[in-house]
Picture: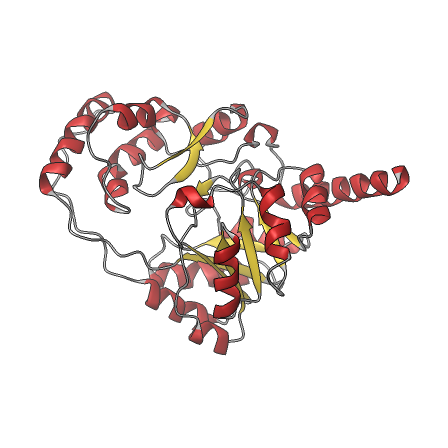
Length: 336
């Protein structure tokens, strides 16, 4: 949810008794500090900040860039955009600076994905630390690194895949299979992420041994989220077969709603460039599509149960989820 988790959304979730999380990966250090302070101005409750672990980018073939630009030309013309400028190199590594901001601001909870960043500073600052795993081996590695809890990212989850040990295909494990196996191998608490949209899913996660859940897609439609209207509509209309894991938009595998842009790039024959270069090439298209409301040119990150979305204030959604979960658990107890 990087880009859509406004301070207002984070604070509303925390004020309702859950843990609001700020997707800070795309924010420069100064903007990250400003957003953290904005959250603090709206809540006295704990909240989290999430970052991407460093991703190394190797040399990029200029001919491959040119071939991809040719594939994107029709979409730029459709949106009234001019020819693209020269591709700028990926921004310098800022993860260390972002981590320094989190440590200096003493953010209550720090979470991360894509690997394992340097944790010494945030640990010394007293942050509770959560790392994302898509396999049992990754969960074990995170525990060795000293995390306080493991977020098990299931196959069903929307967003970029967090796999960091081996190819991402090995991390395509469903939540029902993933959570019990991680729970049996690590001593720290396990949190399930992936297609959880209501109390039924939350109760199921708890039954599997998770001690908590992480929801992203469910909050895309919240009133406080910074989600464009076209994004909200298309995600809420997406059925269980509407999403796919693709590298087409950013260069890193991520679950998103299928669109004509994704389908074209996956079949065009042009090489999809590595993360984050591919995303940099599509940035002007993404921005223009957002401004013009052309939803099927957006990168619509969403989980497999996005059709269960509800348009509610974030605090009301948290309260609804809690009531639903309690009702499901009570029903199961009554049956037994």
